Length: 120
Image (cartoon, rainbow, N blue to C red; front, side):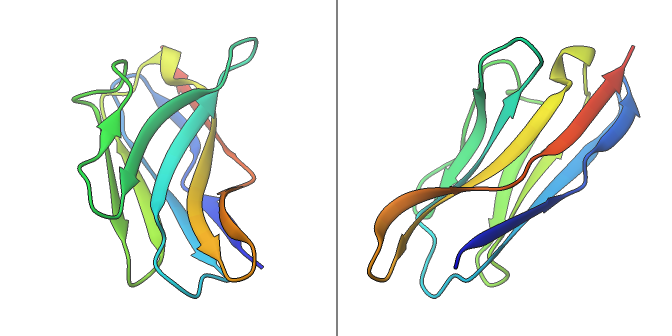
């Protein structure tokens, strides 16, 4: 059973930094893609960053130049380094993994979410 455990959220003042981690377990083969979404109160979910196994990362325009996604394939972990945080980055951040589990096929898996709060 694939499970994702996120950590690293919290409270920070504007201009500060946080690093989110997403550790995947129950993974037997290579992960196709890892990414982060976020959802702020009253707003739609937004793709923040995504990194596939063999391609360059992609980012939402709102975080380009401030956020960096990277992955450690050996540890089956994705990270989201968030710098120069703004109050509008406040949201629940969700890790997602695209993975082809044996007998299941390709599907997306989601973490439980971690709160990031940026104060002005």
